[in-house]
Image 1 (cartoon, helix red, strand yellow):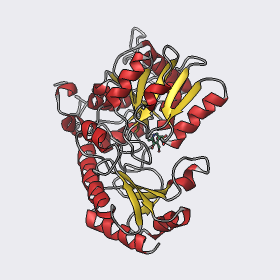
Image 2 (cartoon, protein in one colour):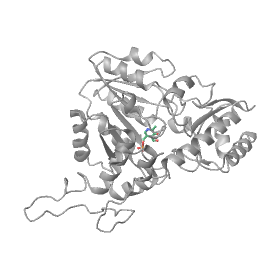
Image 3 (cartoon, rainbow, N blue to C red):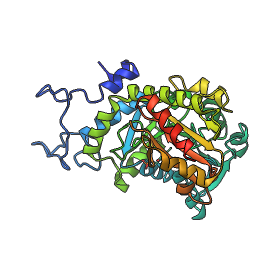
Image 4 (cartoon, rainbow, N blue to C red):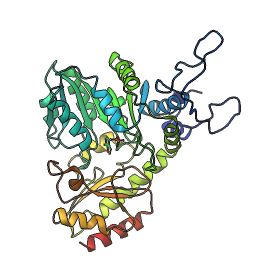
Length: 381
Ligand SMILES: Cc1ncc(COP(=O)(O)O)c(C=O)c1O
């Protein structure tokens, strides 16, 4: 039975299903070979015969993720940033790009670099203003609209269907960084996006031990073929061992994501009115400004990412991070263990992120232990 006919939970759980008819192994072999022999007629046995062009372990991981996202094809890269930079290589010289002002700072810095070099013109729109994206578009000039939702680290939510409609009306494509929704709670391609991106380093792998990125396309366009060619030329595919680990992580994606979502909602509600807390930013809270949009497009939980704005500033936020004993003060997100990070310190003085913001990636621990830990750290401020 094709993967595509199954429900997403089953696709994920069977991501490492046997592919080896010779042995019937339930966990398939990892194809570590960099090269593949030709047959007697000097024909390659596989559609590719060199590891950088593709290999069976890579294809298996890509098929699982493409099926989860309901796209026609996926391409796995050696990191999230490798996927993003490969996609931006397909932007025509001088074309216009639109993106939110608050988003993963690595992507914003990369787009600003392309602007500085004269490769693109760039409009960063106000992510708090629901009409700002549509105003930023330039008909027949905008080539790419890049959004992230929820936005890292304020967890504002952008309406994907509305963004797709606006982008298409201007003649642009819409790419969505869906790292935080993890192919569980939102499927951007079904809402009109053209390309969905994940830092697979995060939820898709889920164990803080693999660096990976993925692009999935809704249609097999000429631009998508360029992405595929560029990945080979640049030399950026995910190596086989990492593909295997990623598939192992993928098998538990739904149980991990749902537990993280339920923990995060409990924590957000618990600390929303805490005397040392200015506010909790979590799209699952009714008080969140984009809760209505989130409730419409996040159909299986609001995820494990939340931020706490502490009363005070830079110093109080850092004090909270270093006072945590169960939650680890570390960067990254989407792993089984909870992490906390003072984003302003990481992103630097030009970052629009407030100095009193602490970002939490909530894991799958018992929520009572996490709440007790955050309470004692807040008391230490
Ligand atoms: C939302 C988001 N997009 C993209 C990236 C970049 O991915 P990677 O670190 O896998 O290169 C990250 C990494 O933190 C991220 O959080």
